[in-house]
Length: 509
Image (cartoon, rainbow, N blue to C red; front, side, top):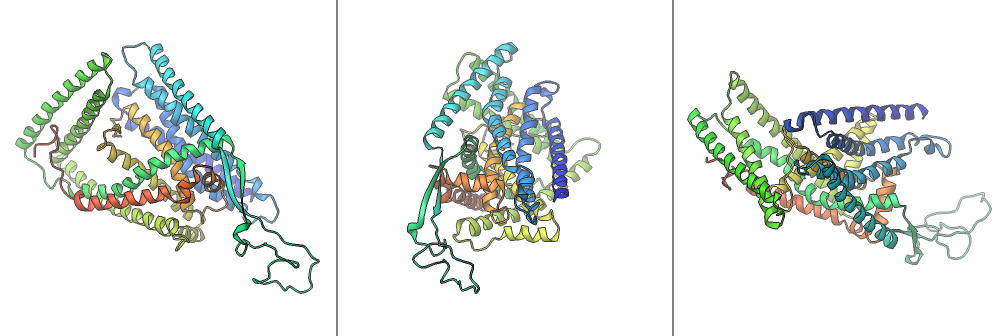
């Protein structure tokens, strides 16, 4: 067992280093050229946040492996010698909450501050906003923890007498208790009156994690439900709507001229909004106009990208066109594979979580069988399904951000992502990662049984006063499945159609 624990520690350290290096690579390649060699603090927050989110997802498979390290031990207390996963979970999610509610807002306020102000004034303004946020959050958490920060566990009171060890064993399913009289020593045959409520106060870190999970679960149910359908179907229908042939030079000049005119109009609109902002106008109409300009800029960038695909230029134009076609073929392949994974997820949620009792362990049993084939195969499959849910949440946020007025657009683009978009998406990923872990620990409770994550998310969270009913009646799971079904139907009905011009800044053909 000691060798297994040492190997687990080494793997954990190596994985953390790899995650950090990958996130640095993503930051360097996704950042906008305007942010090169500056905005170092937001960049540090981005790398830290992405690392925490990735490590938190990987901690659940590590928790399962850590539990397996002592399952064959022959002495009591062997599991106390493994990694302190519960302490690690709480530490990671406390850091998660601090980043989401304090550090990331401060970094965004500082980055988006008026460039005409001095650095000191920008820091002061960002600190004022952050301190205000901290005071509000502290008051809300303190009041809620003081009033309803308790856990109500439903238990059964079972009792039985004692007697000398018998020479023959006469007990059976009809006689489970020792001695004469009425005793309740079996939870299956005990009367309903044996149920009791055991109340205790939860620890404050666990309560903070629980409330953060509730906020993340709302986002997860909405964005995840939409995204689990949009992620594969968006790739498939992108292949269906792909450009079929290269346009002529005259068509390219015509379209490029129109896009140039629209870009000038957008620049004028943005300058007008900037002057309006300097004048102190930040009302509802101003925010609506900013949202409209952001949406038009995003659509203009998409039109430019589409035009470049339809008319490749340079000495290697034919090679570029061939790579474009291969890219769309790759989208089709990954879209089909993703569709299979999405359908499997929906089936698993229905037959294991929504139907009581579950019809089948389904994916839980698949992971166990894979572990029997090779020790880490089931763990890797388990991690893949958890990561897929997180990708679905991000996709859903991007899709709804283009259609809902109250959601700010923060697109992630290779080589053209500003730090405020980075910070927003990192905050969304961090907040959603908590609920993804909670959802996975519930959906794969049979595979991840007796783990520290299940103790936090499966027992304490689902028994918290005032919150437990959301999980008792599967509110988030039902919302997730309903939104996924509606999105599937919408895409099946309208997703295959080629997009038509819907605004002033669309392609003319």
